[in-house]
Length: 207
Image (tube, rainbow, N blue to C red; front, side, top):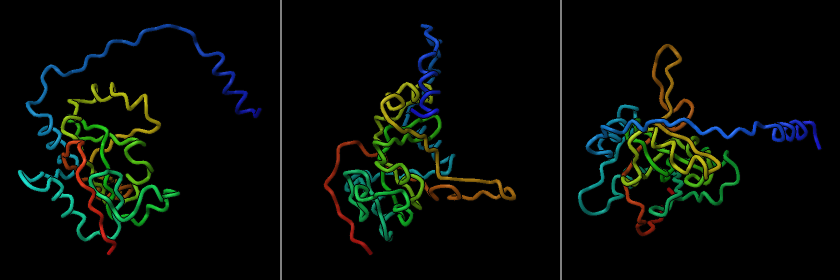
C-alpha cells in the first residue's frame, strides 16, 4: 500500500461520526414565473445563448438542421439526429478537436439562470461539450426547474460521475475588456426545446 493509500485510509477511518441534520434551506419559489420556458429563454439570451424557436407545425428539428446544414463534422449523442462522427468511436478527448457542431440533450435546465445541466450520461465523452466549435442542446420543457435551489435537489448530483452547468457559450473579457466568445470552450450554445420522445434517425452525409 502506498503512502497516499495510507493517508486516505486514515482519513476515512477517522471521519467524524456525528449525526447532524442539514439545515432547512428555503426553495425561494413562492413567486415563480408564469412560464418556465419563457423565463429560461430570456435568461439564456441574457447570457449569450441562442434559443431556437421550434416551428408551429412540421419538422420540430428544422431549426437544428438549418444550423448544421454546412457543417463538415457533426457529433450527436441524441437519437433524434445522427451525425457523421460517432461518439462511440471516440477513444480520447483530442479526437473531438475537429468537431464543428456537437448535439446533446441536457438532463434538465434552470429558468432562473438560463443554464443547462450536462452530465457524463448526456455527453458520453465529457470533452465534447468543450472542444466542439458550437454546441446545440435539446431540452425537454418538462425538465426546466424554477431556480438553482430546485436544481441542486435533482438526483444527477448524486447519481452521476460528472455534472456541470453550462450557461451560454464560453466567454472572457480579461484582455483589454474585449468580450471574446469561444476562448476556453464552445463559440456558441443553442438550445432547442424538444420533448424526450425521439424522432426518426436522419443520418448526415460527410461533406
